[in-house]
Length: 140
Length: 140
Image (cartoon, rainbow over all chains, first blue to last red; front, top):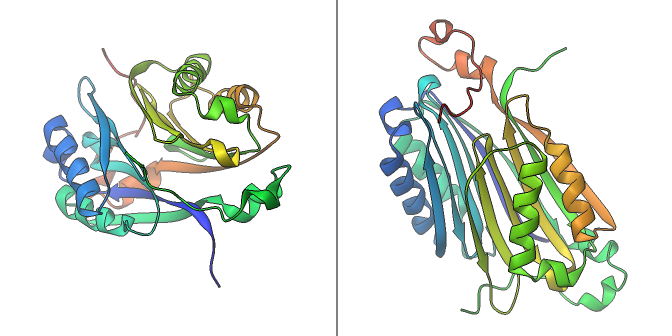
């Protein structure tokens, strides 16, 4: 079977990571942007925040949706979201890359379909007139 | 029973929304920031991008995690994430507010626990030494 959706969203829990990496805003920003790039995403903007005493939060907006992160260095834990649209991106590339960069000894993930086309049509008053519902990359 | 987690993450699908709202970067940014505020979150930074021909993506970093959005005005559809930590925030306030602002005639959501403390301890080499795992708000 084939599920038609606008996007796919991976929710990741990285456990027992390298504390020094998780507490560095520079490294987190670098790794998150690189994760987007190697997943074949087009980065449009990003924002990162360093918390006091430590911990980093941030998001990378990509043409194909976003990546987000929150780190708890003191617990060796990071939560990451990789939400992508379209077929040219593989979110699992980002997953693998970050797992390695963070030195996570254990990772867990779930994938959630976002924007299921059948529902978008069903709940729209003129659903059948919408035509084929597809993700259209940024026209620039 | 009580589930101990660092955060809670609501994944929302808003259907049959007001197309004019979904295509306005100004309104989306305004509503997302206001949703964070009325949910009692502390906004630290935000980033929004207007796609060509239309559609808006953005994220609001809050001290207690983040909110993110992607809109498809042509389908009346928006995907929203509300990820919050700590007990002082109620993500469902943001959910209700955005549902109303977007004029969504139908909404769906799932809630995913993020950073389950039992797992963070289990997968940490010195898990028992971590003490009580709690979300500590930004010390400023």
